[in-house]
Image 1 (spheres, helix red, strand yellow):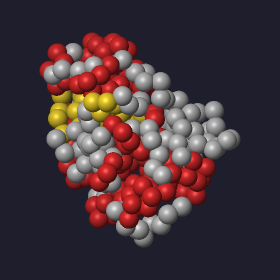
Image 2 (tube, helix red, strand yellow; image 1 turned 30 degrees about the horizontal axis):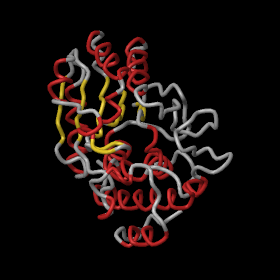
Image 3 (tube, rainbow, N blue to C red; image 1 turned 180 degrees about the horizontal axis):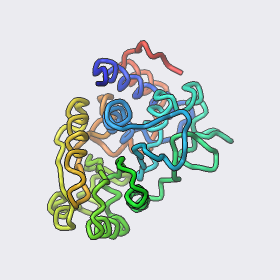
Image 4 (tube, rainbow, N blue to C red; image 1 turned 60 degrees about the horizontal axis):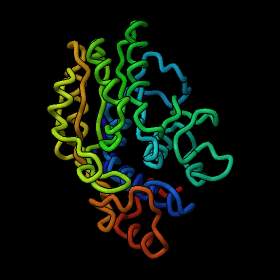
Length: 283
């Protein structure tokens, strides 16, 4: 069992990492990265079976994760490094020339933990379905996890993938939607309303779970474990996870304004003051 107090501490450190990475290069996407911190810490720290070393692309007999909304790379990079995939000091190279830590995850730099380039919204679920089918064909009993954004569901490819997964009974797949109600241009409801999202996923043949508190670490862990118990029954599983964009920094919370904006010096200092230093230490 994971030490929950250490995972809480890791959440704070990951948020510090996110802000420091984005501030250092004045570029990146802090909002949803902060909002999805508990999800990544829960997934890598308490739920998935994974092996940082040696990292193998095929991930045989391991759980796999695919990030579809690749712009939230800061949170993923932080959790990967602090899970042992690559040295923590490498976080200082985020978005710099010739860095392995590109603004959107890429594979040609050979960063351990990254299995597919992502950030072209709408594609990640399709890749995850392919990986899940591969595991099924190979008799590999492990799970495939995928995270998407809610605004991303405005992409038509997502709905094609949802139909495909249900039709082919891809029941070793768990997709989580970061249901924060915000996207780069404003609230989802103002850009293109998603309507009754639970009803739509259910109508497309998925087993639908709703997590009301996606920034509560214990509840995220419990829901991911519950989703695993729902697999293997002929339906893919989706968790609609309600989070708050910018969670953990009061002036960033609940607004699309920090989707892709870096804090200035004063804002950075104010944000970091809300996140106490941890025993894990900054990079």
